[in-house]
Length: 211
Image (tube, rainbow, N blue to C red):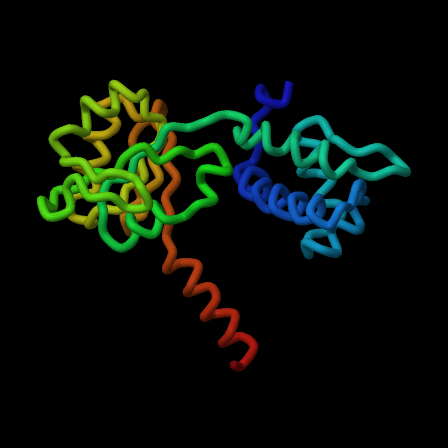
């Protein structure tokens, strides 16, 4: 079974990209595609595509290629998009507001139920229809709503404290936007996001081309 294998994190990180490209292909009413055709679109070698998909059992047929809709659905299941995840945002600043306003989360199965903040001027106001609640209510809310994921957009000086608080309340998934990489034990899944890293890579690539 695919779930019993140890899959490389590099492969996992490519899956959402496959998922996006396949969605675009469906919108173009393309029914099937070969690994070579997909590689031309994605700028990944056909060999890499086949290796990645073979980690999960392989989905193509020799001489036919991949059924686009079927592959899209299978990758979606691997990524958990057939499930719903209850989420909260902690921190109603610029990043928290941007996350609350991003409509694609809901389409991908991530339901943002509430936002938490300490600013009394923001409490009980709403961002994109999502209510901002006081931090004092966090633990009760997490327990009542069985929250799966906390998106942390708080200042770096309190990130460890907030992370311990939400995981102590029972949250098992952390999406961390602080500069500090969080490591919270084997029973908590953490995805550390560093937007500036991606921007610096872009800067390097521009300088490399002499722009």
